Amino acid sequence: MKKFETYVPNQDRNKAYLGKRLGEITTVAELYQFTYDYIIQRVRSADVIWFNIRKMPYMLFEVEHSTDIKNSLSKFVELQDFYTDFCIVADEVRKREFQAKMSLEAFKPISKRVRFWNYEDVAEFHTKTSEFICIEQKLGGL
Picture 1 (cartoon, rainbow, N blue to C red):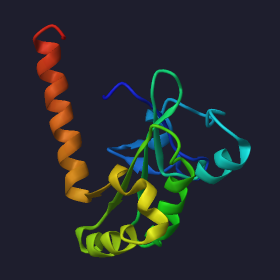
Picture 2 (cartoon, one colour; picture 1 turned 60 degrees about the vertical axis):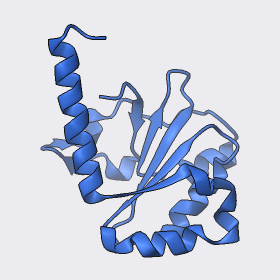
Picture 3 (cartoon, helix red, strand yellow; picture 1 turned 90 degrees about the vertical axis):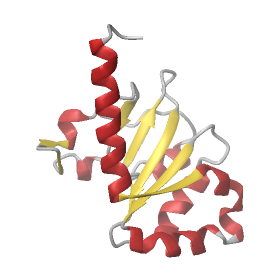
Picture 4 (tube, rainbow, N blue to C red; picture 1 turned 180 degrees about the horizontal axis):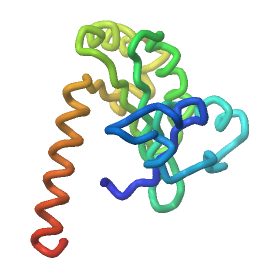
């Protein structure tokens, strides 16, 4: 909907999203080789990566239902030299934990580029984006 190419790791391709398998709605089968191999290896397990038209990572998402947020933030740090934003998606009850981790010195270089979205935020983002696209199409596109 946002016109980004999307990637999910192989281990998540069969997971369901809105009645479809993630592998059916993603557009990138193999992670682009946009940088050094050691960085690619580190970020290839990111839950979702949006790529811009130049095949560079625009945004990384990590869904943290029960795993350690610090591991996800360390993946984000690997891309600190790229023009990339980052998002932790988790239950609202984990927001304080997220804020505590973000206050660590190790994550200072990316602190202004990392967002926290709770599950309701993601649902609202999807709904509102869908509504906007429908209005755009009705009006003949912009």
